[in-house]
Length: 324
Image (cartoon, rainbow, N blue to C red; front, side):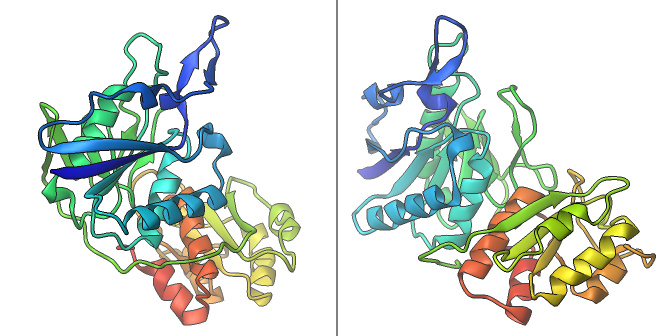
């Protein structure tokens, strides 16, 4: 019989609505009280790692979680499920996807409604995630996200709605699979990649979102000796206002890696336009184009890369690889 380990980290799935209507953390995760999650096919045990709202989760928490998983992998566990707040779930999921080389499925899930709200989705999502982690077809699919009866790759999934239970979507390619009557069915195969394990995190990797009329002010503000990287969400295929170019050149001159993604929900950034601030000019200056990721995930990837000591060509190759 398979053994599935559930690691709780907090979030809405572990919260309750109080008498004033505010959704707040509880002293005890309500999901720890459920003992009916085991089936004839697998047994489920649970461990509380954190009990934090997802907006409180930091990269250090993500690193601790990855180390907890690595420790669990030294036992006979056959699958790991992580409950997590939805606001930053995609970042934690992708971080784990980057740093873990795991022979067993790792599946994240959460909830859009707290445990005592009408229509609470937490227990259903947890059951779906456990079934996914126990499925042989989930092996080798990378870290997964299972919510609302859909199974997504951590690499590409994103939260698309503030409150809807169908918030998690994969705009570019769609989900890898679905759950039918509680059983996972996969329809796509994720391309496998090599993990990038790290033991520590380099701080001060920033994310800026470009906008019409943006100037050099924010770029100059982060041009500091302590800055280790910058990701820019640029309009369209990857173009910036001309006023930002000198400041970006100054960052690159300080050997601060600058990575560019599109702020569009679909498509990828590419060095197409040759005007001042256009993608082609930015690429010629040394800006790295990262395809298939949104800004928050590209920042996670860049932080992992610099924490692993990647530099120059190795860093560029890692960031440009759309399959990692």
